[in-house]
Image 1 (cartoon, helix red, strand yellow):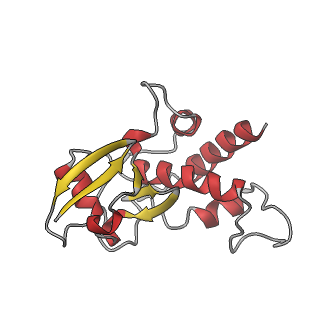
Image 2 (cartoon, one colour):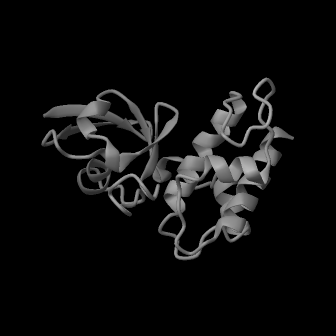
Length: 169
């Protein structure tokens, strides 16, 4: 099938077998290796990308389902070689060790920031009538779909907390 995806702000024409996942289209057809294949079952979050502003597991969706969608990968977050505050905070707080999960963690945290900004509650939100507060429990719940085999969760949470507090200051 012929389709066009807008990936990191750039329209990209593809001719794919309709069974190709978005993950494989990004990695093998568009040469964007930042998005990782971890479990290939939607359980680890290594393949998290942002589609139309929402985070998804790219291994669980077919590329043809995203004709015309805006897809953002880890390669599309930095601007002109300048890291986002979240990416810089991951480095500062050692939010990674082997780095395999890091692209998915950062894409997930980027979309999570927008969810918080819009006031979406989570299972950790104490009061559903007020805007969710940025706590470690809230971050841990919202990031629970992204696993880190190296157990860098304290650094990941610290990086997210710092980046989002600076953004809101």
